[in-house]
Length: 153
Image (cartoon, rainbow, N blue to C red; front, top):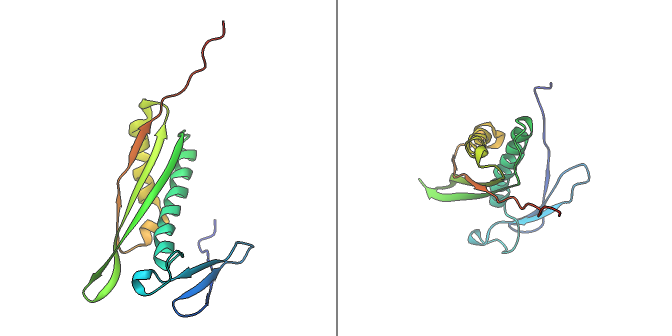
């Protein structure tokens, strides 16, 4: 297995406080702006969104991979990621990103295993391990009612 990988993006200015990010390989380009609170345009992706989304998407990929390797079945999985940007000591920085994953399972007996796999995903997530800010996990596990077909007479 290789021990080094590189990920390149190109970022072009499209005027004051806005631009376009692109990646080779046929992926669509994305426009972005500084957030409105920093004099950017509303309704656009921001570098702050990209930062928080990087952690959220990495967590989803990591959990899904761990679940697959562990043969853990779940009905539904999503994560909400919330970045806390604060002005401290004269500089803006992310101080915390909260991960609020929700996983739905069909068997109540899998509850503890689901929580353990969510915690393992947090510790294994490459982006989370690369951040200086605090990453806090608030997991939710839901047990879904399985709908059974009525017996045929």
